[in-house]
Amino acid sequence: MPKKKEDTEIIENPIAEEESDFADELKEEPIEEIIEEAPLEETKEEPAPAEEAKAEAEPKVEEPKSYEYDDPNLEAIEFARAACLKSYRGMGKWTILPTVVMVAGIVLAWILPNYVWPDNSTLALGITIGIVAVILVLMIVLSVIKKRKTDARMKVYLNDFYTFTGQYVFDGTGITNLTGDIDSKLTKIEFEEAGLYKDLFNVGSRASLTFNYKGHKCGIADAAGQIKGAKALQTVFVGKFMRATNNYKGATLTIYLKGNDRALPPTDIDDIPVIIEDKTMVVRGEQGAKKAFTKKVKDAIKSFRMDETLVDMTVRIEEGKTFILFGYEDTLMILPMEKPFNPAPTQHYKADFRKALDLIDAIDGIKKSQKDEPVAEEEPKAEELKAEETVEEAKEATPEAVEEPKAEETPAIDEEHKA
Image (cartoon, helix red, strand yellow):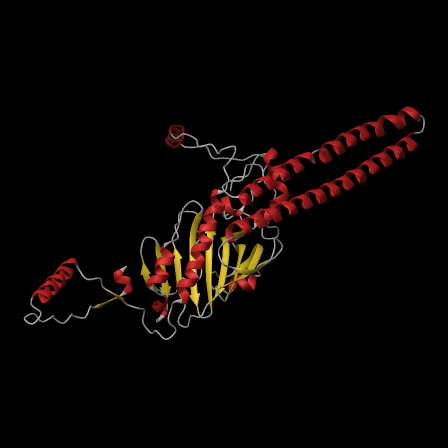
């Protein structure tokens, strides 16, 4: 993601550590230190003549200066953001004042001793060094105070953001016993239980929440997975990591919903046999896994739409547990700071969360003893319906003369072909 210039960077810097885990751009980051300072100026490649002409032809879409919020929780998020930004800008005195004091002190430390004790250079030098040392200590103390105040203010904002987001997203869903906060973490072991990514080196997370839904123990967290590249860490997943218990018995089914060029497909599923593949999804599983891809499950999966917010998505259904990994864009995963809060990505997430609960319901419908996927009866054709109506009318007219024909059995249709 492009970094802001210096003035913007100062504003965004307090949450740099929080943001680094959730920026899904594959950028060069040293393994020893994941978070690195942003460049003061953004460097861009010069566009080719054709590209430059195209850029001029396309009108630039400016982000609105404000948004309409249809829910008090969304409005509260914007209020919290604006308050945090105002507070941070007010802390500018902690940077300007020490700088002025330091410059004045150095000048004073150089001139005053030589003016008062012009014949004693040793004493003048000692006093100069002493004044500079005091100023440096003062600078360090002020810097520590500023950092603590900034961290405390950002902690309040982060907590408010996730509290109001949770109240907005989870309201009316029927979930209970919601626990966790901004400091709750998803462990690397919990992430690896999904079995979708190999050679994971680091898993960053925040706001790992747990809850109950219709007897299922569930959880959802902001998460980012990284692997070791040749010279730097490489992001393989960023988004919402959701899990839920289930009563399913059978082979593991893995479904990947394809996305755009920003998508990050799972890295450890290529060896699993493909059951179905089309332009929107790939369904994988060993023998017997197809039974989990019922019509209800398929309909629930197809209700999700990949776009500029939900980049891609992976679902894994295995015995006892379901994993749903939403690959979200930075517009949802990175907290707004300088610009107004755009509610659209959060509204998208709210709709996706409800669809995920519908998917959990659909998985509950998979019969434990079923060896093959359920079959659906083929709807009778219009000609057959008309013929049946004709026979029924004739029977009513002459019931003794007309014998109702035996209905032929409707052939079973494979769910895959019916779809």
